[in-house]
Image (tube, rainbow over all chains, first blue to last red):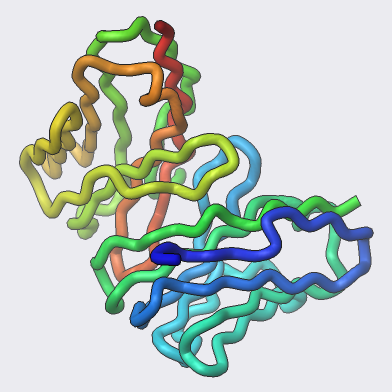
Length: 114
Length: 109
């Protein structure tokens, strides 16, 4: 497809479990971003990749959150030892280059921690 | 204080009305501004992208930026039920987007 693809669309996990969320950006897009969106709120920045390099991870809420993009394409956001406050929609976005180019979003993964 | 403030609504208008959505921001260094539309259980979709002060029009949508008052607006003319969604304003200082809370809009037939 032409857009950003995220999987799974929905994920339910028990508190304490590890989860992995996948993002397939638009082909050829250099920049990839992860955002967290709580219910009724705007998305909040988590981390940013330019190709395979993670250039900004200032938004990751704790060291339980880890993201990678080993080949500069697909990215995975991993959350270890999940907690209830991790319940949110996790959005991935990509853009052609870094900086001010428009970001294109996927439909997100809705994570529920029981 | 949040860097981008937006009234969450909800806002309900009749079909055909003119809708005005607004945000304020705190950092005068911000220069690029965006409006995204987000339908329920979908990702944000870029509507408008503007640089610095002034107006930009695209069909029924007009984005306005007033840097002197740090105020950004989105106007929707002849609103349609299909415009019912959450509208998010955003700015980008260095790549990452900073969003407002989003305004939930409902256009009634």
